[in-house]
Length: 427
Image 1 (cartoon, one colour):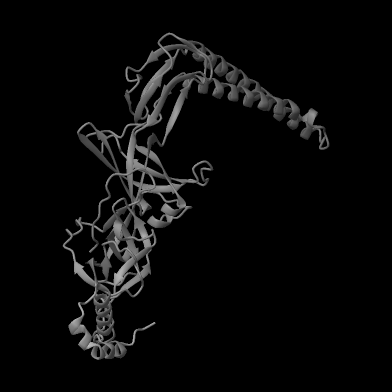
Image 2 (tube, one colour):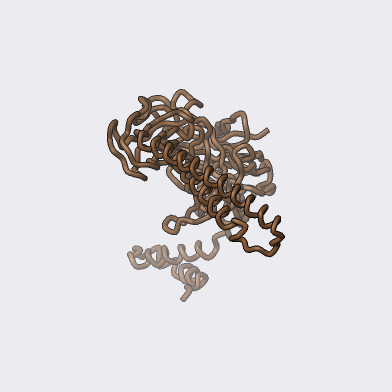
């Protein structure tokens, strides 16, 4: 209950005479203090109400710049020859000659004699078949003469309806067939004689050798393995998403000279980096069921002579597929991407705007986005509660410019482990 201050005052006035006589007791003193406190409490002035002014949150921003960006697909693979085959003997016999170049790593030239098999028996077979052909030719000539004589005699006797046997035709056909068979046997013997010599089918290298001098080999025995150095191939594993990003069709097939997808290859040899240039010529028709990837096949012409380091079969190389050029894109640091899908911007009213990021490409350090207006203020700093429409104060940070190369903007795919991506600007 609130104490009546006026009653307290009246009480003090009425008894002021007594107060002069009394010694103030502690109880009376407490009563006076209590009354004074409540009087002051009830009569204190109301505080002045001032409207609070919200402070803008300071954020670091960078100004975006649109540019044309070339997407580079990153992959890796093992070098294999386009043409590689096993040399097999087509006839049986003892090896009588071997080229000194027929050793692992040996260099061979197209048409070079690599192996000879003893051909004495095959030469004799040719002589025998030629003799039989000559005999068959003589028998055919005799049959032709007899047939002409018989037909002439029948005409003189006016026996127009005589049988073929009387005309000597069956004997003639038999002689013709005998000659054809003899000629076929001669051709077969000559072919077997030719097959005693094995020549290099192309310019290339020897992978391995399986025989030695004077060794007897049977028909279809493996003699050596050789491969062409004219064209080397690399199978590059890529996901369907990577195909779409670089603009490479899933069913791509072009000749080397007509391909529009250049590929830069490199590998490390100690402190030396070897480089080669190839082209995508086709994609394989079947998806790998285990990795859910598709292989793009790259060809390199004259890889053994295109650099100081030959493009060896079996070499593991890194590959960068120069893909499509995406127009009016923006390269941003990776840290500006929020929740893996949005960007924070400062609008013209200095308020926070949260927009979805249309990502064309990701790298370990950056992202490439489309449909971002030029000169947008992209927030790079963190916010505790990023509320749409939050008043902010933009502070531009002085980031070093993105390094530029000579050609189009380059961004590497990183589905596999890759080195630091390179970036360049088109135009």
